[in-house]
Image (cartoon, rainbow, N blue to C red; front, side, top):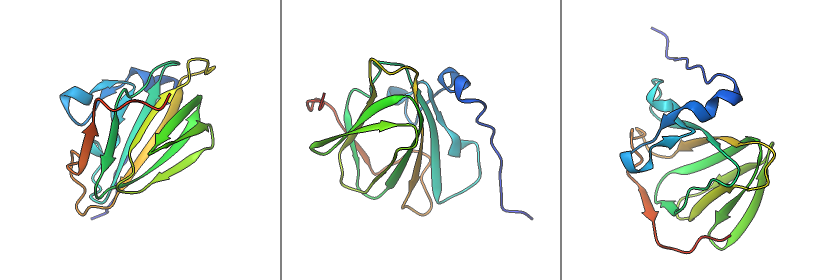
Length: 142
């Protein structure tokens, strides 16, 4: 028996049409939890698309999981603890456990901000990241 699975993300232009999330309160257009469609148990992946001016709206932090954000299109920013990092096509941001994070697509971005987020660090990787803590009510960095 082979140990692989295949999912088709489609063209970047179709990513905004997906509606997904880990929990009802974080489900939104432009988000797809790809690892719910594949059979791996140590790596998770989401495909994301935010329209210009759109943002997460809150901070969150993981206690165990590490994330890598690979930006494919558009212009945005990530808040990482007390810093703001500009992101665009080709930017890769690694975020370790314990680092607060939030992100947005810049209002003046010429296209949607599109990226994949790769999660790893728990075995098996839970279907819902149970090490994540949303930090609502904290001032956003922009």
